[in-house]
Length: 449
Ligand SMILES: [Zn+2]
Image 1: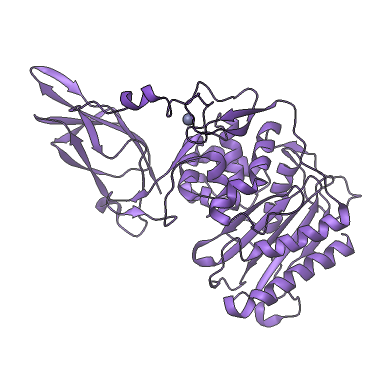
Image 2: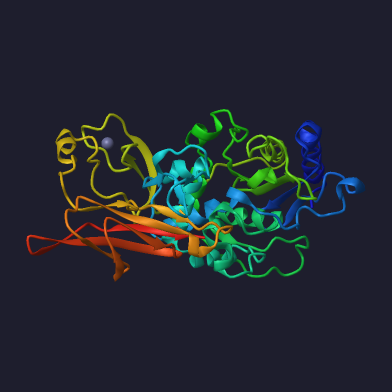
């Protein structure tokens, strides 16, 4: 521990809680700072006031189990990039349907259409994160989190479901800050520790160097997070600083974690009794305390810019398509890529020829519902037998037959019910027209728990 850092961290937490406390019903918080080079703990503030028995001051908020909300998303994006995703890839931020297929499940209140991965992570949109975990696989994501030292996530993947991407599994501030320290180290995980004399457990590579850099580059991009948090957010500091917030349902927990190449710091605010705070989002609750701590650490230890590892390329892309621009694109932007995974081809959205070619041809057979790429969520409060969606066809004239996951359904017609099953599915239909079997294109969709 460094006494100066310890005092600065405790004071920042105390100031912030005093400023927020009574009007927002926030009774406690915790802060932790780790030295990236050694994994040594520089500052540990387990609660606002150890002697405040009324607010459980003796509970250690650094090791208490809490849901992290969006704070796990960077590790999911790192995994997706290791599996071939790029910062410029488009991903759809669209409603996720509740079981039954009628009311969209509102994770986010507003949806942003197609967004680039950089923007989706920096602005912490929820639906793209659910789409990514469907793509990478839930078990692979859980295994990655264990690589990163989240031992508290010991239950099987099915227990968490895709909600793991939105932080429904409980972790500690210690695990969280230490996992971000691995990002700061370019992907190498080290155990956090007090006693630097005792031999440390061996370091291990948890994230590839390129992926760690791409995530750091996104988390330190002030303009990418501006649509959600504004240009003058608490994370817009006068030195290189990568940061992420997390907030849980009903504002029970509020997190902010950030790092430079030298140190990693995290703050949690909330109530040890689990009650909800009032009107506090990630950016107004824990983030200002993290900002105070970051400014203090920079004074104590200085700061250096994030180093770009070999094998990273900067390439111009069209902001709308995420692909290398053509001469018709109205603008272009720099994006960073792993040299082995550059964006292919060229933007076709802005070529004048493409506009007329993109018009849909009329009267084809197609699945009207669900749409290709839709995500549905099972409602835990409704019996499974009551959760079905109606498959709907378009363009058919005669009797139609449905095929779902390669199996023909017994029921026929324009609109047939199908009881929801978790997992990835693919559906199409056929009809007989002039003695010939005509087939619709497939709609692929996913059901999450
Ligand atoms: Zn373009």
